[in-house]
Image (tube, rainbow, N blue to C red; front, side, top):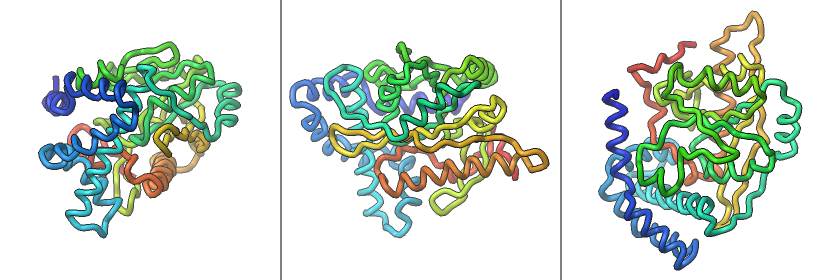
Length: 312
């Protein structure tokens, strides 16, 4: 196991344990959704005061989202971000356990339904650390298609057990990017079979990245989803979800990109253009929902080991 991976797993296990999740589960059953939410305002104070790693990870985003704010205001933003993430984790548990029902509105459903029926080479769902991906996957059950989720195994056993992350369901299957060649062979096979493959588009996890402009500064986003789509000749649907009230979510699948290399043009520049379009959509999202972007990683810092950053 690589040193960085071992460190990541140790750090993940520090945040959340079985007893903590049991406490919130019991609170949800006894006091309902809003009652469980209320406990977060106390718990998140602890994380802001004592979890320096979590605060540091969130600060990279908060600094760019609120560039004119000072230290204390940024700390408040981080606190609200933690509370927002906690609410969506509780929602996720409520969904998988059947404790609560949510109103999930899909924006652009007719478009994605048409693409699913007409695409000859499958579809790439490009996701990000926004909103609640499990809500989005629940909403896409209507398509009656299996979604292959490219996702690393959850590092925290308590999180995995309570939220059933990494557990395959009838409509969601897992492709691990930690297998040989990053799972690319399996991904291409599923696309050839006209399936839907969901790929994360805003965090590198050691994969190759391209430089784009994001929240006013240079950032590095992975471009694997676009290279795969261009090679497989399939569309890219950007998947975003937003929590608009305690019991309502909006899943947005209205933004569709069609990566296709144009002969005679620089391939790297074309990739950068597609990734920049994706980054621009995320930027609009963060301005609308600043506390629903859960990217606890500094994408504005250039990685120096094992990234293979693409020069343009």
